[in-house]
Image (cartoon, rainbow, N blue to C red; front, side, top):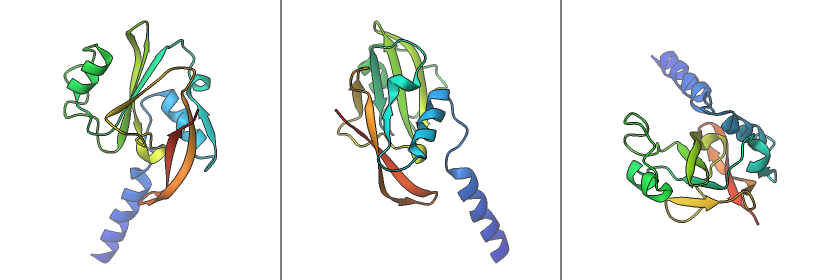
Length: 149
């Protein structure tokens, strides 16, 4: 029985960290985060499309909040039905008030939630983050992504 529990724990650790990414941007963020503390992440450099607004929503932000903030009811019925999952941040890129890209980003691969309120609004001019190690999790070091000016 002890062997089973150890095997189960090993599977949780291996599979629970950075999972398959919903977006190439999320994957690139995770790669930058893996460079460690002090790394600067410029979101504009990771995108290959024009955008003028970026909203990053914290875990537990509801569909209603996301729709109200973006002034768009774009999420399908099966997308984040209970809100942004605990282990994710939700990024929404816009251009001329239209949604052009959105995805979940796993917090274990860079935690954007270091701000007050349910969301943060950014533009291409200020979408810059510094990687800061802030403790440990079951999966290893925990990195916060702090907005820098």
